[in-house]
Image (cartoon, rainbow, N blue to C red; front, top):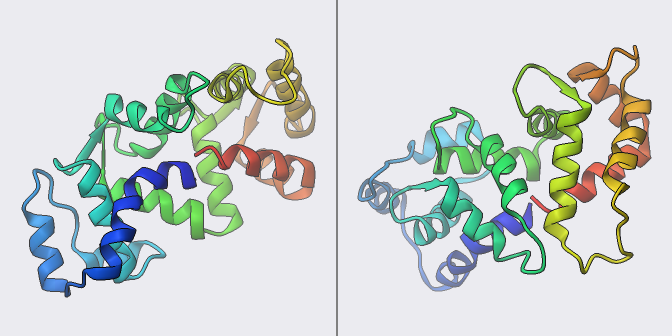
Length: 217
């Protein structure tokens, strides 16, 4: 998740060492963009961040997105900076949809910090539920092999030809087949949220694999 954070927070960290504002100033700052986020008190109540942390995150977000929202094209451009040797566009598309919880076609600051709060400071169950939502591309409440293959292949495409050791063409399929053998408990061809949670929490190898994938968020 640090990759998504990098661009948004780099300028904020520099500013934070020399720049201090109180809550009134920050609320005023929030009001001057096209989209005004929820107040700090409400965001603090709904996330695992303090007001101070939210202020720092907001300044970085506004620095990159002066309008107060991020559309998919901008999100892809930001994400591509971290993977110059691969094609990050497909994975960024899936990740954007996971952040865009209201399916509005844009990511607001509230969307950003809500997801960030879960991925950085949520419980294991919350993190797994968020990951399940990412893999459930069509949002029907199940993960099928095609969806998981699309996500895994997008991750490999993003990592690029310089991945070491070199990946074979059928590596994504092998990875997904291994996942499904362990996750699809009743062999009905799809993985439910309960199956996903149970499999991940009882198998350390799956948890490690998912944690590796989370590192590219």
